[in-house]
Image 1 (tube, rainbow, N blue to C red):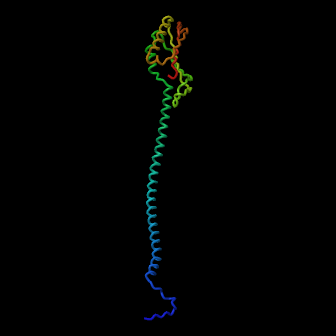
Image 2 (image 1 turned 120 degrees about the horizontal axis):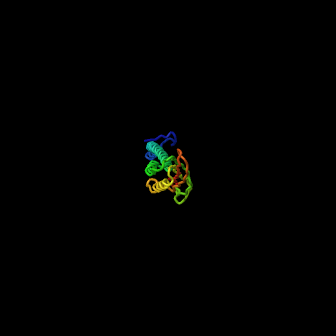
Image 3 (image 1 turned 90 degrees about the vertical axis):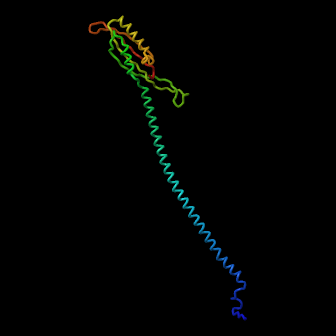
Length: 213
């Protein structure tokens, strides 16, 4: 068999075709492998992003729920503080008042028959007193506490009989369970006058309560 090479050896493919095919195949396979790898990375990234977006949505929902709970808690705290302030004001207000009904009953039950009650009133002053601080019992602070005085005017006709009756009345007030423990002092003053043409004796009785009662 004869071979005629009109190109002088420039156009005849070299022998050993398997090596050439391998080179061409390798050159084609590398871009394909890279493309497959990049596509796989893209799919993986897309899946990861989708999962992360789902988690973010879930976290946002939980944060919203927690935000509502925090707002509700803050509202409850404000309501609790307001209620505590009201209770403090009520307690403070109660401390500035006294139940007079038992005291009036005591006065009526122990009033002598020989005298007549002509006036009954109450005045209130205040004194400064040192007390422990609520949030720090070791520290003493000055506060204003009320001091009440119950004023009574009684009159009788006989001085000798009235003097003994008024003294007995004073002793009964001191020993009464509803009034005695609240009293700091009882002061009595005496005056003479005339009523309906008759000589009468009048007594001013001041029941001074202990500070803060």
